[in-house]
Image (cartoon, rainbow, N blue to C red; front, side, top):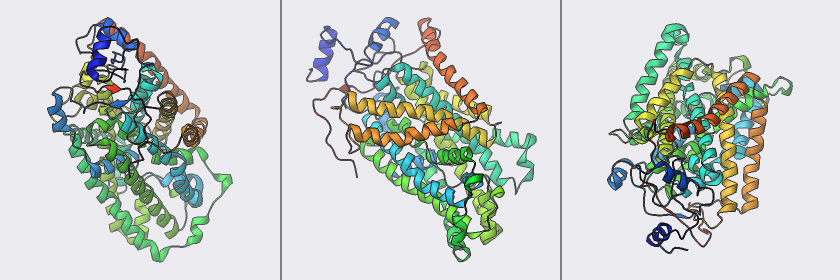
Length: 525
């Protein structure tokens, strides 16, 4: 085994290593001084062939920026713990806006149980896997790199396509949610051209905020997060004299809309892995990422449960009224019209935060895929603010295109695609545990192989249930999107061979050195 990068490089040059570890044009995530952007197609194909058998180990020296070397990192990678907590908060939640359909679908009791139990079935396993894999592969691209390392570049690309598309679909919700919360105050925004123009204006403004830089987005998320949660804290205190615990126990199993119920829970509590696509922009990710996931989990669960608890316990139940935007009306009934206005304003702020965070995640994912050679080189170019300009434009275009769908259709389609991608993540997590047990993991879930499988089992079962409950329309549209991804990968390879677009691999991506011992480090507190 080579004892240093210099020796390893020399052995590879002399042909003494049978399994090359250089990143290829199809996005090989395991590299040793990735191929130069100007390398030939044949060189790229040769290095790509070493993907699935490449040893994985401890990362080498720090990441260097694509355009400007180490100075680029010093300039742009500045996301610290508190902004990262709120970036995760907005990736997953953004506040209790959108939880109303859980009451509409199943009544108060099942809604409350769902937001207490579902995090243990889904959120905690997904957050733990994200913490381990995100610290093992601390670069932009996140889960695309995990799946590529475990299953090969083809499936890594499919992961990237499905997750990016589900993220764009998800982002199309936020202008809709914003308008749904304020349409009672501005009836003209309920439909027609005023609504269309409002969606376009919101998309343009928030896209510009995203363009201005991830650090700005992070601190904007902190500011908006506090303002978004504050009125619900006020509502909870104001509701105490009106609470009737018997209202929480209402349930009618014969009238439960299980598809809407599970899709609402799933949509409100997923996407913990989305922050992995920004890990390359985080300060000291091996410590910061696990801590931020833990703190964000607490904020998310409490931010859902208490508004739901007080809202259902303080007013008489009318399930038909519990649709997106109804919490603002609940606030009016509890404390007056002033609180409804405050929550409507908070809804607007929250949707702004969710939009810019989701777009940042989606666009940096495209940047990470381009740096691994999966997408044309233009996707890897940064603006003067360090943001992926082409990725932002692509993501914004997708949002505008999908914004005509209804709230329920968007949630169902996003969940369907997200399920496919998450299943690949769970398989990759187990695969990397068994294939590379000696790889260094700065944060490691304190379970063995059997424990890792058991951890992934509840999310996998839930994924099957969500997919099984999807409507035929959503299933057909989503499967059509999956088929596009299956065709898109060989199509991009053909374009690369024809040299119609330029593809390259970032030579500054880190080496992955093999190690002879399994990581025994305890999880970061």
